[in-house]
Amino acid sequence: MAHTPRLLRHWKSKLFSLLLATTVWFGVVGRDIQDESNVEVPIRVKCAEGVSVLPLEFKTLKADFTGPSGKLDWLREQIGEGRLVATINLINEIDPEAIPQGRTTDRPWTFSSKDLNLPDDVKLKHARPPKIKISYQRKIERSVKVMPRFYYNDGDEKKEVKVGDPTAGIVGEGHEINWPSTFCQPATVKVSGPETVLLKMEHIETEPVNIGDLKGFYPAKAELAQEVQDPELGMVRIDPHPPKDGVTVMIYIDPERKERKLKGVPIFYIKPKLFIYAVTIKNDEKNDIEAVDLTVRGPATGVDKLTAKDPDILAAVDLREPLKPNVPREMPLWIKLPEGIKLVGKPPNIEVTLSPIEPKKTPGE
Image 1 (tube, rainbow, N blue to C red):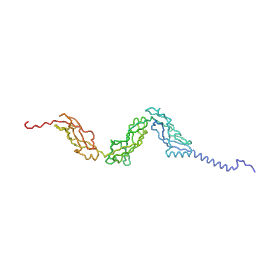
Image 2 (image 1 turned 90 degrees about the horizontal axis):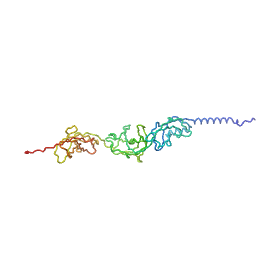
Image 3 (image 1 turned 90 degrees about the vertical axis):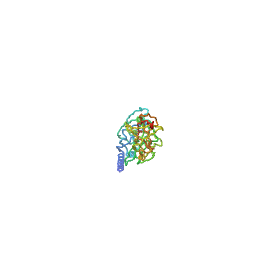
């Protein structure tokens, strides 16, 4: 019987095993070599304390990756959960003490795989943009005034109300905001951010507070805005440092106020005990008058009830101060109004002339 070499023994089984192993190897290798393209990743900047980075030209990075399929599955999961971030780490790259005072400094940054904290076998193939410019300034801290912002819902539309704007009807029928009595507590907070921005900054605004359908006194918690609009730099991030209890906006909602003109309010005289003069009063047009028109403002319900001859309204000339006879003198009217009602503008000026009254002669004199 002929001797069969050991290498050729059971050659069919060996050939089958080789083909099977080759097929599996190609399948595994072919499955591992994959790409993940056009992934959008947010850009984040980390820097040392004392450095403030200005708004970036690009907020996201578009990237192409390559790597084993299992690792790319992990990458897709990170992207879906928003945990994949392109981090520009400047902590050891910029010395805050070396930044010129009051100036912006620029430096380039080229993206690489390490900026995305990728596994060793996942590589960044392409980044768009591949390089960006980083602009930064000194970071400073200062105290600024807190300014509240308000809004109300008009149907499906959200409308903002600026401080001081008339708001009759917005905060409930027949009511309005009492702006002089509306304030924030605390009145000021510390903020930190780019030097040139903070030196121009007069106040920090709260996020808008809903004032729809409120009445009376209303304290509302408010978050502070974290971005400010700079005419040269655009939207710039700042860091407010409110107290641990946060910021409270104290809002006072009063009955709606309205203006009304009262025509023909009589002018009274406040005279000393011994007074022997005739009084002539002229207005700005030099016409003799005995009454004056007044424009008042107050709660609508109170203003609507007023009349020119209301006993609680007084327009008077104070004649207790010595005046020279026959010499015209300009002076303001003294105005007294009911509580809660205020005069619009200054009291009107009038011209007063005193004329001595000749004593009546008796018969035989």
